[in-house]
Length: 309
Image (cartoon, rainbow, N blue to C red):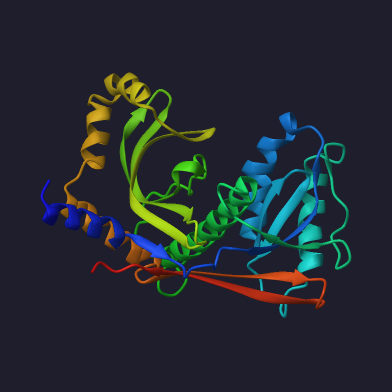
């Protein structure tokens, strides 16, 4: 490979990166409170598939870890009583699903909520990195959903025109990044449900040894089976099994969408970033409560796009 082609490859990689300044992620302030899950084998699925999305949709970005609930707040404390708000959400959720004996938490107050500086070093503090990664992904998921549904309400809050199919953001494989699907094409119905090919972008968080936060962006393509029980991504073997019912080679359809030329990939990533408002920067702003000052403060982290040189 020539020196020129190596340089072009490096430029292409960095062109789809958003970066903080150095030391920004040396510490990541959050709040935590007691949240003991007594029987994880029975409750974890409910917590991760129902409770966390419900909290997020109400402005409480949370992640449970070792009997604590780590939280950041996408709410303005001058407009919302955050402690009353989160306690109402948790109490109603636990009561409605009869989880009183399976989940234990004390009413969250100014006195028992902790102010914690997580240190998201993947090597020295892997558990802190996992918590921070989940909180950042959940924050971005909430922000993206707000953008998408705002766009699809129409100019005056109506439902003008036909909405595109939309798959909720998948946090199924956070090690490989947060996937944001923005376009879906139906390939037909099978005995198991409708098959869709969805395209969008993948965002992958990295923290460098100098505590710089990086969000890598790439094209994401996934094949989904939609049924009455929900959505499921399909493996290559499952695609081949469903091909006969669809009357086409499903894996080849998927491969054709995923294996695009560099120019198509570049144009699609640019289009998706623009639709989400992430053309030049990805800002993260949230509130936390400090027991020392007795007030809520705003934390601001800005991922600025790295331009090709």
